[in-house]
Image 1: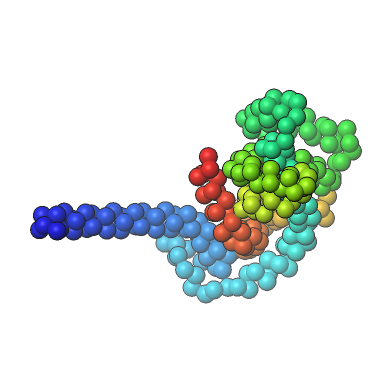
Image 2 (image 1 turned 30 degrees about the vertical axis):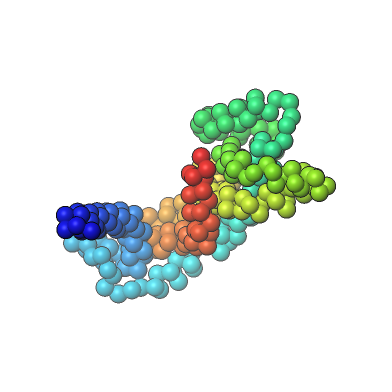
Length: 289
């Protein structure tokens, strides 16, 4: 290698190193900006109210008052609210993931009359704002079926795929699986359901976990519909319980922030457990599309 070529190679390596450092610094900066509100809530939950209003504010508590969580749990019915929330989320996640897989498989592999029209309507429904259907659905669930003050209006819609995007995501994954596998299984005598359970489902496991996570996050944060359909305080979910708790305490921000930390902790734990599959599923979706 000549001296000039060696110099260009060194210059290119130096430039790439500088760009990597800048990129890493930008990523760290955005990570800090994303984590900072969570840290602010957590640090507030460990302070006294006098320390919260102190100026200039401190990033780190003078005394880490974990006793605030004990006080919060005495008035905030966290475990009851968590149980009520799981009563909604667990069957919705299981049913939504399974039915979305069935629908995605049907659209990806089966042939039936009107398939293209139904698929177009399904995809087109993603453009429909949720607020448009809120009042008709409320009248149907409460006056039509008598499910007022009940969890059923929050659970039953997820027995139909849990939304068009979930079906779309599963279908795109299944479309990327070679049809030769289905044909080979058919020659061996396998039917549609055996192909689905033994070949398709193991191959799309990351997509199914992503769908389950999407349903979990949607229901966990869905304050509006829970507020509409649930009236009794003994049926409150974490979102409703936290809203009611804030109203009771008003200016006691340390306990309010402790309750807030407790409310989002299960969601963070669930996400961390499925994070690897979530990132893998999203990455594969991008590559296949």
